[in-house]
Length: 200
Ligand SMILES: O=C(O)CCC(=O)C(=O)O
Ligand SMILES: [Fe+2]
Image (cartoon, rainbow, N blue to C red; front, side, top):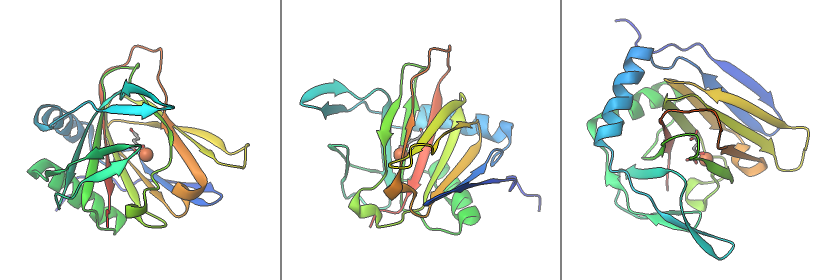
């Protein structure tokens, strides 16, 4: 049988992190089909976040899907997951096959345009355990993923996350590094990102 996804990959050599990028995890055709289905089927919501005592709307839409209905909290938001659907299960299986890890939840982000963003953070909630493997799949517009080491100031990088790509974050990345999707002034179409996680 023919492989539907390409295993062509770039491994970044970074201190205290393992980052592996598969630019064409899915073909452009498959990726476009996933994008449209996820756009329509996902139960998107926009949460309020409190930062420095002020309440704002989160600058993107999100949705959480998981195998259990236990609530998950991050950045002061508690989300109640929806059960996995067929398309999310299919992507989860593909990502599990290539990463040789098991995931039980996925957080989806919808960046509606260049004004939507995701600020500097690490995915270091204690339910994720000490060195979590996080699999990040992107569909739609290309956006810059920026990542920087918390203390080694010269370690400041960016990667363009493309339509149909997979980025695996492993090792001590969530302990020693921060990442973000900054706003952009360039006219930018919608982008959907899925981060698969194992929540204990
Ligand atoms: O949109 C992305 O590529 C990153 C998403 C992310 O970092 C997160 O949801 O924790
Ligand atoms: Fe993240």
